[in-house]
Length: 215
Image 1 (tube, one colour):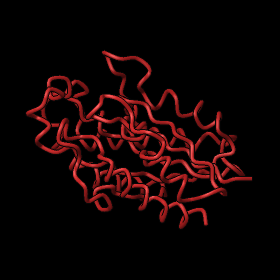
Image 2 (cartoon, rainbow, N blue to C red):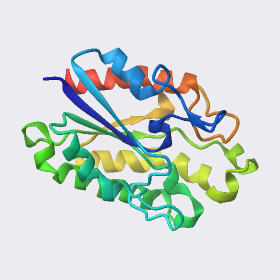
Image 3 (cartoon, rainbow, N blue to C red):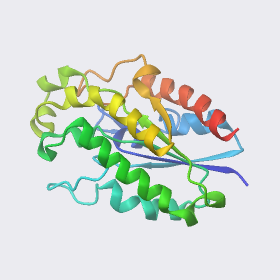
Image 4 (tube, rainbow, N blue to C red):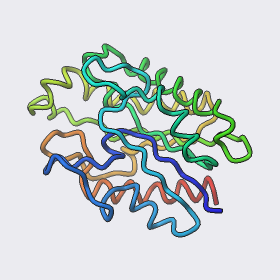
């Protein structure tokens, strides 16, 4: 049986393309590139949803709270060998009023709930890789998206790496900071979504991580 890798994230996992307001195709998204690199022994499952948060209810859009969907997601794809969580960008929105430390606590709630879904994991053993999303660039504040994101998002996103590492260490999760492996900056339209080069670089780094974790 193939090893099942579930990629649970937001628009950067879904593959949002700011230039078209659409989606990068199957030859461009990091999830698809990761699948190609890993080969036939792996099943890489895309579970990206634009706007998704770790645990915060969005007063404008429904169904975006990761905590509400993680159990169903894992059970839909069991047996799961590895869960990759890359969330936090949307949690920085001003309307949630949350600090980086509180966003990390939201991530902890999500990871705890995922680990507790024993029937979803192969042999009942949870295996989670926490990925820090690429930082929001300060230039986002001069774009249209700043009107809905609000203030302070770039600063909070830059603080997530340290806070997420604490959570990964506490829970015994694997950890990767995308900012250390993606040298391409975010796009120059909204300054918070991966470019084509960024998708490729993230896929390359995650191939190494996944093979190291799963063999």
